[in-house]
Structures are given as C-alpha cells and as structure tokens.
Image (cartoon, rainbow, N blue to C red; front, side, top):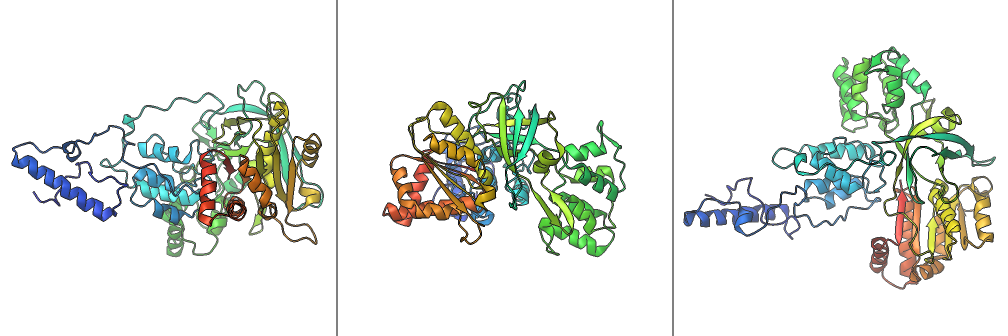
Length: 538
C-alpha cells in the first residue's frame, strides 16, 4: 500500500493548528497513516484507524475537531476577505464563524461562533440571519455550505436539542407588548429625525436589565406592498397558507434589499438574452449598472419592467422579514413594566421614489397608542455595568448610541452608585441634536455624572468634531481612569465610529502610557478579555 493511498476515513494525525501548511499536513497525515498500516500488515494485524493506532482518543463530538479555539478574525472592523484569509485551513465551522459580521449582536439569535456551530451541526438551516453581515455573509455561508457533504459534515443527531427559550426571550418565541407612543427628540433646525418610543410590558411576562436589547417584529409599509402588488398585477386577497397575499407581504417577507434568489428566479424567467445575462450577473453579486446596492424588491421590477411573477414564484424568491434589534434606553429600576427605545427614523429617496426604514417608520408612521406588537428581550452579551458600584465607568455613545447609557445612568442613580462616571456624546448640532440634554445636566448637578464631554460635527463656524477627536484631547485623563480600573463602553456604528474610537484609545494608551503601539494594542486587548472594554455595536 502506498502512503499516498490513504483512506479518507482515517482520522488525521497532524492537528489543524500544527505549524504546517495545508499541503504539508496532508502529506504528513498520509505518510504516518500509511506507515502505521504497513506496520500492522507486517504483524498480521487488521488495519486500524490511524488515530487509534497512535493512542489518540477519538471523540464522538462533531465539534471536537482539534481546533485551538483562537479566532483572530473576530474583529468587526476587519474586511471579509481578510477574515477568511485568517481562517484558511481551519475547520469548516470556524470558517463559517469568520464569515459572520463579528459583532456578537444577537440579532441572529446567537453569538457569531454559536450561529456558525448551529449551521455546521444542521441545527439551524437559515443562512441569512446575520443582518450586519448582509449579502456578503449569506453568500459566503452558502459557498461554505457546499462543503457539508456526508463525509465532512457533522450530523445533527449527535448533539442534544437546544433548550426551548421562555416566551419573550428569543426571536422564535416573541410576546405581545403595547406601544404607548413616540416623541421626536430633535429640535427645529435638525437634519435628522430621531424618536423616543415607550412600551408597556404589563402582562407580557418579561423583564430586562440595563444593557439588554429589544427585538421588534415590524411590518412593511402598506403603500409599498400595494405598489408591488399593483406592479405585478397580483390579487391582494389571494390566499396563501391561510393568509391573504397582502398580509404575507406585510408581515412575513423582506421587501428591502433584493436577495440573490430573486435575481436567479428572474433570470430563469427572462426571455431577453441581455436581461438574462444581467440578472445572472447580479445574482452572483456583480453590479453591471452600478445600482445593485440601491435596489429593493420593487426597484428590481421597476428596472426590468417586462418581467412578471406569480404570487408563488415571488414568495419563493424572497427572504423572511427579520426582527430588528434595538438597544434599550431605560432601566426597569426607574419604572416597572416600562421600556423605552431611541430610534433614528430612516427616510431617503432613490430614483425619485421615497424609501423608508422598515421598523423606524413602522414606529413613527403606522402605530397608534395601544397598538400591540410582537417583541422579545435579547439579553446582553457581555455588556453590563461592573459588579462593584465603586468602579469608574466611561461611556461613549454618539447619536442613538446614547440609548444604553441612559439605561446605565438610570440604574446607577437607582442603586446610588458612588463610582465616577464619564459620558462622551456627539451628534451634528448642539442646539437641536443633544438627546436627553436636561437629564444629563440633572445627573451632573446631582453629582451622579462626574464628567460630560460632547462633540458636534455640523455646528456653524466650528470645525467638524467627533467623539474620538474629543477623546484624544482628554487622553491623559482617560488613561488615568484606565489605570484606576475604569470600564470603557461604546455603543454605535461598528464600521466607522467604533473603529475610530478603538484607534483613538490605542493612541491614547501608547502616548500617555509611554508604550509602543503593539503594547498599547495588547493593553486594550487585555481590557477586552477582562471585561473592562465592552461594545454594543451594529
């Protein structure tokens, strides 16, 4: 038997984390497996599994693949291609994790690593749940899923079923809560529209803590659904699984960014060769006309006006409408059975057609006080106040990123915390975009909020200033707080703001700690590891 002719069923002898290239590992596995088999044949023994022959313990756990557990790609600011390169040669489930958005936001119902494991085990089939990752994540997961054959995919029968979540604590088991009303937070002159929203949890059987988030099941705007039905000449009353087509499109299907499956289906239906070619390219993520990122479902049909679909074809081509996750901006210690959110209302125009954020305009335009909506509490993943109330805290939350810190401060006041607190807040204009200004000033007067630092990017006659800019000017004090054990929290946009703040912190540590850039990075990494640097980003 040649050492190259090794059965694919023999367990590898060289672990995936050994310091060899994939080709070197493959060759060495073949060499040792063949050698052991030859030794067994020479002694008149039956061939055995190579791992058993070396005394290795073979596990029935499909996740016991020898991976070292390290995840260098777990960085929300890292581009997809860099993450996948770092995960090259790692087990399939780990490469699936690298395809996620790395935010551990919980919007998919899991943390990134758990979502990847569930897909690998076959316990979760939906590959489009990573909202922050969008199409890029979905496409990569589908590509990786092609590797899940009977030979290398872990069967789901080897893992115990996950425990059923209590009602109101997962996207799978929402409860009904009452919408109490909303109030615009921006004053006259603002270019933004941000609303404070209140809900009544009485009778819902759920509670929450500061730092938690709420998942909301919103509905598509009736006007958008009506326009789509009219464009395709479909009957709104057509029954689909016990519901009208109109209701299915309102509550169950995503009508936002058009999915690849829609382009694929339309390519198959297209008679025009040029349309077919263009649609096939768009299904692969190519952008022949430069408008791929702006097309919603209705926009696709407006772009290809001759194409039609039946109700069944349309529904089969659309993704499910996912819940939206929002940081909670209130504390139950202030008012029992009450919950607040702070939400930017999304409105914009594409090709002269008004477009709207699904959930934000659902709150602002379509709900009336007393309306019931489906919702659930997403418990915080490592985003909570220190156990010791004397521990200093620094909070950084521009725009609606202020939400969890309003919750934190309400908690701290209720608990009469004695530890110092410092808030960094930024927005466009101080006069009209300073959310909850009176509350922060009251906390300062009560000596509950030790310091308040603000940044305004659009104030007339002033240079554009962001929170990271203000942090750099106060870097010496920030580092002093860090040395005294302060916890640092950030909430907001992951791709830009959070990345800029992270870089500012590294520079502050390097400058005022008088250490190298590498040592500053390690300092910050240790803060993350010890739970002193926590992020709620999206």
